[in-house]
Length: 227
Image (tube, rainbow, N blue to C red; front, top):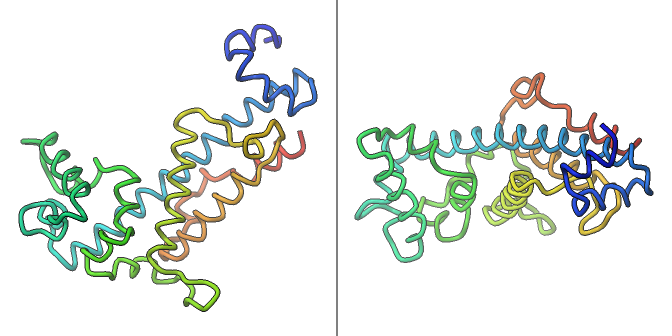
């Protein structure tokens, strides 16, 4: 496909950034666009695997502490989310329970809640409501020091960054550029990738085995850098 046809489909507005980054070389611009899609696909897959691992670790932790139906119970009257500070969390759970209706199961409830929900279990109020021990799922994290505090706030911030990256990809925003610039740059993708690998390791998840055959992020980044 020639560039004129490609641009007609994708739009000139979207392609201008790629064309500028490739110094007007339309062939490279089309290649960069495709490689950004490949990188986005790879990154979304890795984030999705991490999201599933995270929610399952959280679920296992709270099951051991509060029982097999801990999540619905936590959002019910008298549950640990049933307070003013955790009201949004409780409502989110309650709404999903209603949607499931007669098809309800704890497993389906866990699967129905998005990344943002699980991230917020590390925010101040939700973390305290759950007993202030959810960090135990990151049992391999480094010891905190004066310069680096690997507490719930730190985890919340890292998960927020990954959630933002996930949403960027889901809304078809490119991840192959320097922030707000038409300059080819893979640092954004690389940094988030390394953050995911680190968090996997802190959870004692064998990420190499889990992601076998799925993880080509650094390879695609290298291809973009060489373009």
